Image 1: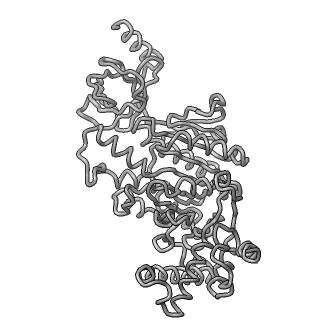
Image 2 (image 1 turned 180 degrees about the vertical axis):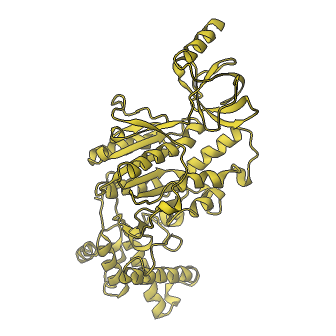
Length: 477
């Protein structure tokens, strides 16, 4: 055993004579302490250990001038007391360049799609400071998704950050998958999907669907699944952002970044903090939650070189929107799409809550006056319907005034018109997906609000595309 350790130490030191080598002096699960003969390496430095340097350790804290505490990012590899650890002299690196297009990689930059090693790439550090304000460029253009409820009530900003908030099973991943289908195929820039702590099945499905729709060649997929260590899941988002920044800054291309799920990034940070023995903050989250999330989110911005548009799924624990993870993410977004369990239970998909969802783009100076006026009127009608719902439940619809009954009829038709069959769920529902332009959505809502379609049954408005489809279905009913 000693001979084997000595052989590994010699193997590590010999090829890189200028690099420092320390030894593991303590092990506690996935956390190790390493002592160096000289000055200790800086925080976030990557260390390599084991045969063939396969064990990846990231320095998390300094104990003294010679000793560091590090996190083993691939703990399935065996570590042992006295094992030599080589200081690589820098942080973890990500592969960037045209060679990553059409590929699926993990947090270490290794391909996981079975297509062989990456070619035509170079490596860049994953830790960077956000772009200074002097280099940032304000946005202002609306990014059309083809989803009626989003384009009408919570328009997404090109070069902004949008969040899809919801508890378990309300349709966050389905909505992200639909946006991939609708937006990536018409998107002229680079598309980057980052899976943080999601299921392997979903990764395989997204990879296959992107290949079938012909958009894989202009996309990059980066995954850190739930079966991987918390350290790997915590760093996979930084790897994705490094690739996105390269295409923006070096290639001057716009980048669409889809993250599923940003809550898992926060959760992985909490697990890492617990492994390192830090005292948790409220609700058990790490005390550095705000700074860690801010350091990642602030890297998503527009510059003169290009724009990064981000759409992020955000799991809300126990449907509690006051949870610290949800509230911290809220503060970084330009659009918040809130998914409602009540609407999902009623079969109104996508289950977007029109009264809780917001967008800073929905202002008179940003969207056309007609869009702003119709969106405000739709919200007003739906808000009045919600206010009347308790009276309807207790006394029935007949006790309402004629004007209130008209409001209820409009609201119920609007609720159903804002539902939509998805391309990504067509095989389960038997209904072909619909891409609805913003103009078609505005026309439909305007005609419903005017009372022009009050003679059509409510069922004609459910799970349909544009208003012409509604009229056709209503005529055949």
